[in-house]
Image (cartoon, rainbow, N blue to C red; front, side, top):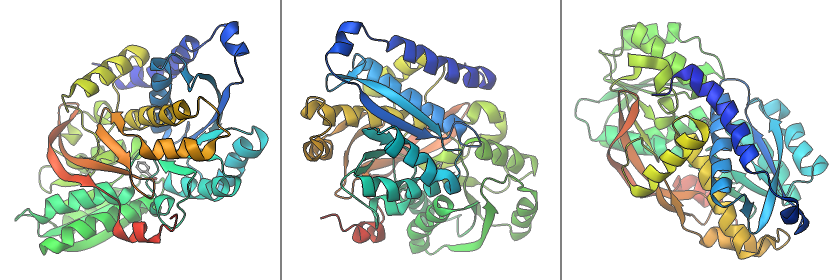
Length: 399
Ligand code: BEZ
């Protein structure tokens, strides 16, 4: 089993190894200019491991395609967005206007992604979102050149809400999350699914992003004594929350549930603190399909670590871009045809096959998972073929 410290080292080394494997002979270079892909991802801060896993997944898809998409090599331009919305416009402008990239891949944080979209809509640069679930991306700010390969925050929030709405012993829930777009949307989705079952939200608790001072709020949860707690945190913040929840003595008293980001990519770091936590997500560790097994083996071989949902999203971004570029023989100037091919594609993903909605968000099965050992073990389908929040879809005026 790969340990946490080795995991972080492996991530950096893995990215370097993959880069070396992608080196190409001079003959290939002479056949055409490289396609410029700008990676705008977090490489520092609480979401850094997510950014690295996305890049690894994308590089694996490229490696499996022989180092070329649409017959052309890829040249990477990288920006660390630090999950900092205030720096997002400058950062994306660097890629779009200075480096003149053909494609922007980014990002993880919803607030940063929303700022990026305002720039890429204007420039028309093909923008693939490999994580950030912010509703406006495929809602009010939807655009032909903005395509999400991951999820909307509402989707997994809603699915967990539906599951909890059917539980007779879950009549009151406390929610706790970071106060920013993603946290707010994960809670909205949860309420949309949960409240129709007749349960009530006993209290909504909020923490400024990316703070991890949970103690006073855990004391409040102990006083309220809800039937369950629903939490969204991710990356380093999720690991800290899971440990603090267990240390506060709550783990065996009040069941903890959430969207799957709460427990993805952190289980080796948190040890026994997450055992039994149930979450909903579009990926799980033991799907046991041939496609997923092959992906997991290839990822482990390339990067010496186990993949998580973020790696899958990066990988799927590569698969979808490859499908688009294949249709135009690598000619990125044929943007309409490129996008039309991406819209038509069925992505044969490790998570299961999926397609884009009219608003460019994946329509996908959301799985229920339970932490057993160091796995987010699949325990069933929470909601099948789920599209986005109806309110977001109605706000998308693309066509
Ligand atoms: C978001 O900001 O949209 C987000 C970040 C981490 C995991 C999931 C969603």
